Image 1 (tube, rainbow, N blue to C red):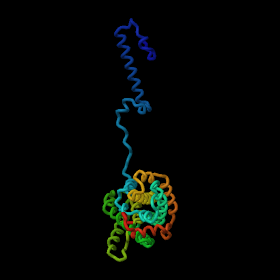
Image 2 (cartoon, helix red, strand yellow):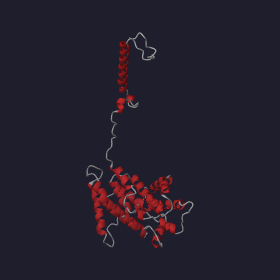
Image 3 (cartoon, rainbow, N blue to C red):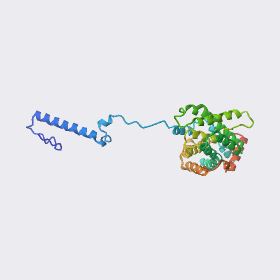
Image 4 (cartoon, one colour):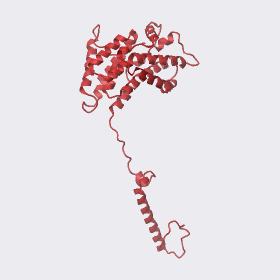
Length: 316
């Protein structure tokens, strides 16, 4: 008996058909349906169309492997990194106290004027040391850069803040990061690099009781050296370093009552911050440490005057 699959089954039914004929017709249709399903499973599009056979199979697992630079990128850019940045306003509190009050109707306008000055000042005084230490994280260069930055900082308050955060970062490296790295030989970290940072830490501890210490442990050279050791790129390191300063500055503005947390996130996510950081990296990319210095002189005045404020909530 010939069966036309495109013919209406109701119209093809005849009263003369017996039960055996109907059973045979059902069996033939089921056989053709099974053959069609088998053919569809072999077709490349079948998995995209959601057939039963493909939906029951387990999805393919992503090809992931431990990525040390990406992991430390997240760690070093984390606001919870205990560098003590929350204790410093980077001159913002003094800036407000010396006549630059916030507009009650537009409280972020005063901060918008201060932000470019602060980023430019911070980049000109610290970024060349970060880049140089990243390019050469050896012990001799790290000690030389630390000494050069110590001599280049005129303001005592700024020097104290840089050393406090640098020593905090060195403590994080010694107590946490260095002990959490994969075994030597299985990652980008070499024994020489680990030895240089360990020797630098010993120099800092040995000189802490001296009138003129062997090393001060400023933040910028240490940050560049550690980022180089864990495999972060040069541009990536510079961006994390400057963005960390912006985050600390915005956090200080929130605690000073200039604006709230939502406005803070709007500033951090905005194009202005991205463009400022990118421009500063381009400007200081080839700057030698001998030419690093303060390009916003009034910033040192705000830093220095912070200690004579009648009341203050930040260390600097």
